[in-house]
Amino acid sequence: MSILTKYILKKYLMNFIIVLISLELFFVGIDFLQNFKSIPASANLQLLYLLYNGFFTLTLALPLSIVFGWVITLAIFIRNNEFVAFNALGATRKNIFRPVVNISILLLTILILLQTTPLAYSYDQKRKIVNNQYFTSSKSDIFLKYNDYYVYFEKLLPLEKRAENIHIFKIDDMDVVETIIGQKAYFQNDKWYVVDVKIVKKPKNITLEESKLDIRYEKFLHTLDGFKPKILDNVYDGNTEISILDAVSALVLLDEQGINTQTIRSVLYNKIIIPFFIIPLLLLIYSYASLNSRFFNMGKFTSFSIFGTLIVWGFFFMLFKFTNGGVVLPELSILMPMFIWVALSIYFYNKKINE
Image 1 (cartoon, rainbow, N blue to C red):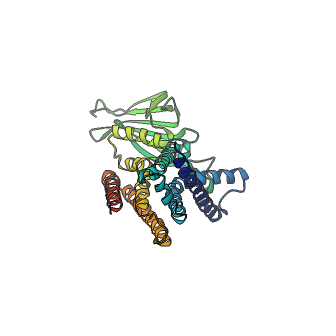
Image 2: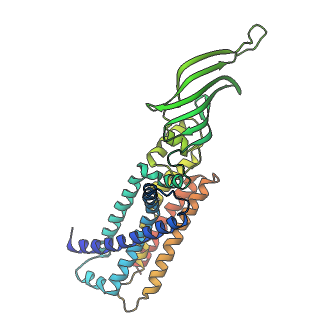
C-alpha cells in the first residue's frame, strides 16, 4: 500500500467514523426519547433496547455514512487544493478513488455478514421490549402448508421453541382424510415433535358397512422438517426482519412446498444487493468534484451530493416496500432498477471525466 493510499484512507475513514457515530447517536437518541415511556424501567432492558436499536440503525446509517464521509473528504481535498498535489505526484483518478471503493465494499460486506447473525432480529427484539414481550413472546393462529398436510398452530412460542394446540390436516382430492391433533409440540433436531397425538382417519369410501372413523393415539409424531421457529415466527407472519441464513432456508423450504417466495426473495435482494447502490453514487460524486477550489461552488456540490444520496436511497427503499405488497416481481422492481442505476452511473461518470 502506497503512502498516498494510506493518506487517503486515513482521511476518509476518520470522516466516515465521525459521520457514522453522529448518525447513530442522532437516530438512536431520537428513537429512545420517543419510546422512553413505553420502555420498561429495568436498566438491563433499557441497555438491550439501545444495543438492538443501535444495530438496526447501523443497517441504515452505514451506507449513508460511506457516502457522506466521501463527500466531506472530497470537500476537504478540494478546499486545501490537495488534488493538485496528488496530480503532481503522478496520481491518476483511479489511484485516488480505488482505495475508497475497496474499503466501502469491505464495510458493506461486513454489514451483510452481520445480518446472517441473530443481530438481524434487532428491530424485532427492540419492538418486543417496548411491548413488554421480550421474555414472553408468542404468536397466534399460524396456518401453513407442508407437503400434503396443512398445519395450524394456535400458539407459537419461538423463544422456547414450542407450540400449543396443533392441528394437522391431510388433504386428498379436496377432502380432509386425516386429522392429527396435539396439545403441545417441541422443536428438536430440526423437526417439530407433537406430543400426545390423536389421529383421526376418515374412510376413503363411506358406506353403510364402513362408516366409522379410525381413531388412534400416539405418544410422539414429527412433522415440518426444517421449519425453524424463527421461520414460522417471521416469514409466515409477514415480517421482513429476518436473518439472511434463515431467509435462504425459508426460500428453499417454501419453494419445495410450492408456496410463493416473492416476499422472501425481495428481502434477500434488499439485504444483499441494494446496499451496494452507494458504490455508483461514490463514482458520480467524485466525477463532479473539481481539482481546483478557485472556480468551484463548494456549497452547491455538498448540498446536491447529500440531497441526491437521500433521493436515491429513498427510491430503493420505496421499491422494496412496494415489492413487499406482492404487486410486482422483485426481479423487476429491485434487481432491474439496480442494474439500470449501475449502468447509468458508469455512463455519466465516463462522460463527465472525458469532457
